[in-house]
Structure formats: C-alpha cells, structure tokens
Image (cartoon, rainbow, N blue to C red):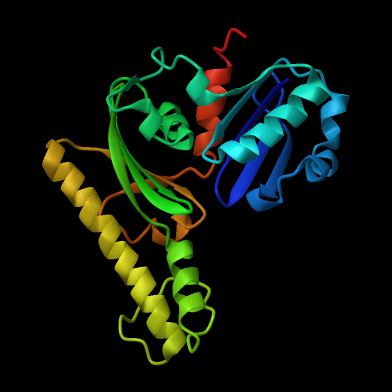
Length: 247
C-alpha cells in the first residue's frame, strides 16, 4: 500500500492507495486542526494495512513534522517529503528548489510528458501559475488567493456582507453582494487571462492549460484559452514519484 498526502495552508489531503493506484481511503483535514490527537481519530485505518511507501508534499513544515512523527510511529515506515527526493529523473528544475512549494513541484511532475508544454493554474490559498516546457520546470507566478482575498476584504470592511463567490454575467452589480461577486469574478478572470497571455508572449510557446484547486471549475469555461480541470493533480504527481521511490 502507498500512503501519500498534500499538506496545504488551508487543507490537508491524505490518501491510502493499493499497488494498482486505486484509492482505498481518503481523508480531508483542515490544516489548522492537525494535532496528534486529531490524527489518531482521522487515521485509525493505518493499523489495518501494511504500508510500503509514504510520501508527502507540504508547504507547512510544522504540520508536516506532526504528521510525519505520527505516521512513522504508527507504520514503522519512513515518511518522506517530496523535496527530500532526487527529482532529476522526473523534471529539470530551472529555479532554486528551495523557492518552490513542493505541491507545485508535484503538480508539474503530474503533467510532464517530455514533449508538451503546460501552464498549471492552482486555485489554493494563493493562486499560482507554474510553467513546464517539455521536461523543464521554468518557474511561475504567485498571486493572492481568491478566497483568501475575499475573506480578507469582508473581515476588514464592517459593512460588507459575507459572499459565496459564483459566476456572474453582469459586470455592474445591482447590490453589494452582486458588486462583490462581480469584482472578484471578473477581476480574477482578468488577472488569469493577462498572466496566461504574458506567459505565451514572453516564452513564444504554446501551452496546455491545466486548472486545479477549489475554484478551478468556476473559471474553466471563462478563460480565453482551452483548459482542463484536474483536482487530483498534486496527488497524481506524488503517486508518480512514489511508484519509482526505492525506499
């Protein structure tokens, strides 16, 4: 069995898979709730299975340490973070690896096929754009996350109501909620289209665009280029690595 997980600023995903890559168990945990006590409730299933390899991506070192210690104690197996692995067989990283989130590297590994170019747009706590040209990870762009920005605005402005972001056809809002929805939907759509356009122009290359993360479905049919959604991108990248992990 394989145990893989992605520790994000907002959410932690942990998946148990059999050797045929079929998911046996999947856990979603709010990252701020990650404690030894909480893990003992959410990951009771660990003692039922013989786990051969464990691999995580993490952008929250404190939470990874808690999870690592818990899982290693329960399974007797070493828990690795993807940046501890030699990734040269998967991709050439053209930037300082320390400066790239491990989830973004996992995303790049998930799509890479040595012949195509990709822009990966991840709607997480931050909205990130990563550029992969054949087997080269060139770097990317980090902009404020949509939900984070929306929550920040509402929390700082006492007269603004809480709003669930959704697609809106009219750019001119007729009330406060529709005005906020318009600003965030059309504002972020403009940001997305502009950054993708600049990447195309600056590199003079064509790309396949892959969307992932919580709000990927909201923007898929609105951006100016054809795109596909894969909300399991990070997990798929980790799975690709763990299958070749000789540990």
